[in-house]
Amino acid sequence: RGPLLSARAQRAAVEKPVAMKLGDAVRDGIIANETLGYFIGRTYLFLKKVGIDPTRLRFRQHLQHEMAHYACDCWDAEIECSYGWVECVGLADRSAYDLTAHSAATKVDLSAHETFAEPVMEEVLEIKPNKKDVAKAFKRDTKLVTETLEAMDEAEAMAMAEAHASGADVSIKSVTTGQEFTITPGMVAIAKKTKKVTGRSFVPSVIEPSFGIGRVLYMVFEHSFYVREDDDQKTVFKFPAVMAPTKCALFPLQVKKDFEPMLERISRSLVSAGVSNKIDDSSASIGKRYARFDELGVPFAVTVDFDSLTDDTVTLRERDSTTQLRLPADDVADLLMRLSNGSATWEEAAAKYPAVTAKE
Image 1 (cartoon, one colour):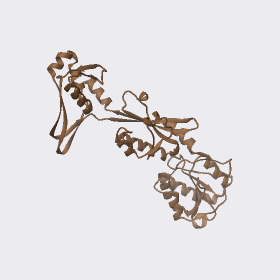
Image 2 (cartoon, rainbow, N blue to C red):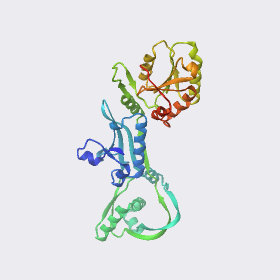
Image 3 (cartoon, rainbow, N blue to C red):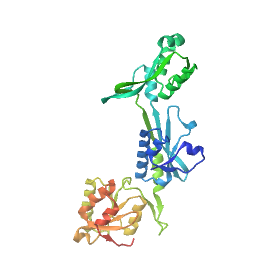
Image 4 (cartoon, rainbow, N blue to C red):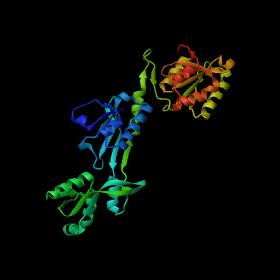
């Protein structure tokens, strides 16, 4: 479900987005098509994954006066922060505007053709300009008028056929030059016919996603920052592990040379697994070192203590819950790799390894 604020809702002075299945939004004509809906969904999932609070995220549809001349539909991913709602991603459906304009300017056919596996019987729309009458009426604009007539969609074409049947003239407008032409009855034959079709030609459409990466990063910082309830001097960045620049901190319980070989071994194994890490062997207390790395958004910390030297186990701490587990040192690299790439959760780790009670 996506938090959608449609143009229709905005015109009705609705301010809160509505959680709606994207498929339903496409079906109801709120989102122009499935492809645009797919990009909205992927953008929503991406922003959640990098740390955006979904309750402060919405997709707002452009109103008609905001719509770019090339777009048939456009949605902005807006994120709420201390400055209010800020546009961070634009998703525009440019339809076939680009290739149609290029094709008209270069006189090169840029349509694609799809051949069906089996022929099908289809009701097809036939638009046949009367070349003699069109040439007589429009002279040097004959080709442009013919192309504009042939480019009409079914609704436009059938509306023209109905008007001509009643003897009325119809105006058409070229999408490439903006010129308008009056088409009189007899200048074009429009009909629907059933025929065997082996394929179809079409001009590909374009969805244009545009991400303001600097804005998204700022929002991640603001949405990730918090102060611990039990100590207002302890600040934390709750970056998702996939986003955190440093995934793990490595601590010796005390500054002793006895701990160094094990710390180096774990650090090398983490590097081999693609897990960024940093050893802090300063003389500060373990609690202060935890707090120092919480401020940097490091999601995990491994502590080597005196028991580690005898049983080759270590303590693994998770930043936000501050819970700790005891596990074999040889399991650390694989577990942190999976925790960092999202293929495992802390809850799954807690179900496998014993918890450790420690006061920070």
